[in-house]
Amino acid sequence: MKGESEELRSRIRELEAAARVLEPDLEEREQLRAELVATSERFLGALDSSPAFVEVADPALGLLDTPIGETGIDLDRALGVLEDQVLRPGGHPASGAHLAYLTGGGMYHAALADYLAAVCNKYAGIFFTGPGPVRMENQVVRWVADLVGYPATAAGSILSGGSLANLTAVVAARDAHELRGADYASAVVYLTSQTHHAVHKAVRIAGLAEAPIRQVALDERLRMRPDALAEIIAADRARGLRPWLVVANAGTTDAGAVDPLDALADVAEREGCWFHVDAAYGGFFLLTEDGRKVLRGIERSDSAVLDPHKSLFLPWGAGVVVARDVNTLTAAFAETGHYLQDAQDVAEVSPSDVSPELTKPFRALRMWLPLIHLGVAPFRAALEEKLLLARYFRHEVARLGFEVGPPPDLSVVTYRWAPPGTTPERADELTQKILDGVRRDGRVFLSSTRIDGRFTLRMAALAHRTHLATIDTALEVLGEQVAKL
Ligand SMILES: *Cc1c(COP(=O)(O)O)cnc(C)c1O
Image (cartoon, rainbow, N blue to C red; front, top):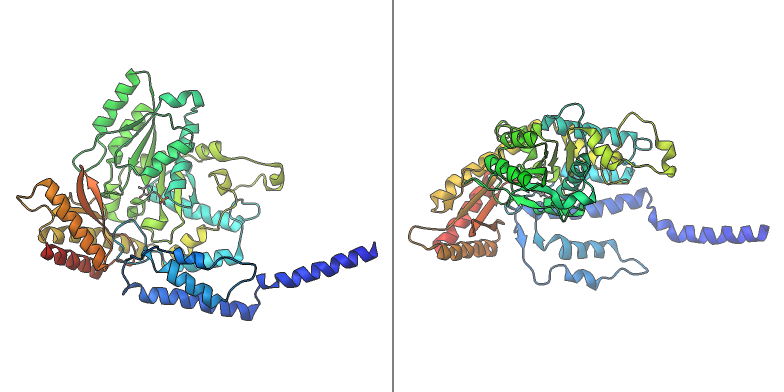
């Protein structure tokens, strides 16, 4: 017996020694940190002068030349591969000149908060073991619920992004309406052609692939028409179907359009439908006076999604879902297991009771630290700045001769090159040509979409690093491309 234990002890000590590198000491930590920080500083230092989109052949393929092996490689070399293969190619959502897709940029404060959250590795799923992170998440979610205008009954959670947040809301809506498999084929969802595909995906993942989906007619500014919604619901009722869910957009991806939420809330309420607002992009514009006007009516929704990694400038990895009534979330998501018996009977609602997740990163810290430390005022200012930048851009791009879309509800502007006398097809070609030129130039990253079937350019100002100088550069680049036509 004694001999067996000794043998075990000696083998365990060997393994401990072999695994020791998993826990760097103070000096090693300092060294690691210095190298990683140096990489991040090189990245940030070059951000303003490097293209917002870097096109290379076979992006990141070189990663495969450095396979993961039984023994490691120097950190220097690993970081070299990282910088060259991963950080350099493709889009740079951290750049202020990324005016294509909706990116918040990624605040440095939040990045360091992530570092701290990961180092401390506090548990954020259940109050019993993670009272601090859970109370902090609830505090931050409450701040969002107040912003939306929800009553004290509201609750929510910080998920990985808008997709999971929308899924959470759709599942809560499904269960609140007590839909069962046999009901799915007659449970109608109302949205528009402008609705983000994440909502379609959420409906499907929620099991409702058979549910009829109605694309409600749009007004000339690409917003859902409340009269059309009322009409189509009435027609569905007459056919014996079950209108169930209305999804409104508060900031569409194409054009930044916000549906008339207050009027849609009237219809949803009258018809007994769950009213969900996808404000993944537009939500935090509620911090501004103009944004509050545009988003009026969001407070009447049953659930809403706001992405801090968009309009609150956080790095990727944060989407908030809030629901008016906490019970709709707990009914859909609260579960327990015998291994959780020590975690019962606490006053605070746990994220695991109101979302699909259990163990999750301590996400509240990345949102709380910037807000508590800097206060809300600079966020408000930055968002108002984006609204004005969009207005300014629209004005100036029209002066360059572009045909512009409607005045922006938020911070996306649509425009295309269609001088008098050109056919729509020719205008499509010329507009595409301009975009190709902008891509080659590289100083700013713009994107395109189709509106009413026509090739249209977009400019989305959202990152905290996007300022007047960026927009002036974008205008300069567009002007140069026009001159080349
Ligand atoms: C970005 C976005 C989504 C998807 O959110 P992710 O954070 O990318 O998962 C959904 N809806 C709208 C309106 C969006 O802008």
